[in-house]
Length: 345
Ligand code: ATP
Image (cartoon, rainbow, N blue to C red):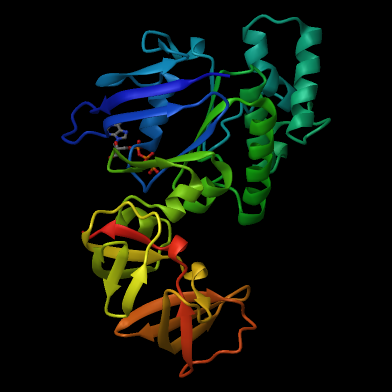
C-alpha cells in the first residue's frame, strides 16, 4: 500500500494564459480510494496525468511513500491507468490483453496464464481469455481494461471516468465491482469523475476542484453535512439556503430563531443550510417553524414539499404516503444537529 502525496502542484500548459492547476496539495493515504471531483475543465485529468507521469508539473511535487517520483518515467512508477474508453489492443485476445504487462516484465508463461485466469475471475469474466475485444460489450471491455491494469499489482490505480460511457445499470454494477476490488486488493486509488453521486458512492474521501483549485478535501459525509462554501453545498445538491444572522449559538432569519449545534462559522451575516431530507413534519420543543405547504411534487420514492414560513421557502423531502397537501398548515422541525451555517457570498 502506497502513500501518495501531491504537494503544491501547479500546471500551466504551453501557450495558455491560465493555470490548469493552482498549488494543489493532497495526501492520499495507503489503500484509500479518493475521488477527484469537479465540473469539466477543473483539472481532474491533469492531476491524474501528473501522478502517472504522463505530464510534468510547472512546479510542485508528487511523492510515493515519501519519495519524489518526478524523475521516474511513467512505466517505472508502478501506476496503472484506466481511461474513459477501454483502449484494448484490438488484434490481441482478452487473455493477451490482460497478460500484456506481465509479458513486458518477462514473467514465465505458466505464471502469466495463472495470473490472467485469476484476474478474469476477479472481474467476473471467467473463461473469456480467447475472446476478441470486438466480441465484448462495453462493460466487459472496461472490466478487461481494469484486469489489465490490476494484473501488474500497481502501487497506485488511476481511473479516469471509467464508467462514463456505460449505461446506468452497468455503471452501478461496475461501481460495486470497483469498490469491492479496491477494498480487497487495498490499492491506493484515484478516481476521476464529474458525477457527485458516483464520488459519494465510491470514495473514502473526495477532493473537489473548481477552476484548478482545491475547494474541500473531505469524506462524502463531510461534504453533505459540513460544506465549506455555498458553491460546494450547491454542487452537492443543497436546496435550502436561508439568509440571516448568526449570534450566540442561534441563527436569526425571517422564519424565526433557530438553535445551532457545532457550527463553526463566525458570528455575523451568513446563510443557513439544511438538507430537505433532514426536515421533519413534526412539532418539537426546539427549532419548530410554522408554515403552509405551497406545492407538493411526487417523486416516487419520496415527495418533495415546498413550505412557506415567515417569508422563507423551504424544501422538505418526506415519505410519499405522508397525508399532506398544498394549503395545509404544518409544523416543521429543523433538528439543530442538521443545521449548518455558511459565510454569505
Ligand atoms: P473534463 O471533465 O472535461 O475531462 P478535467 O477536469 O479533467 O475536465 P483537464 O482536462 O485537466 O480538466 O483540463 C484542465 C484545464 O486545462 C482546462 O481548461 C483545459 O482546457 C486545459 N488543458 C487540458 N489539456 C491541455 C493541453 N494539452 N493544452 C492546453 N490546455 C489544456
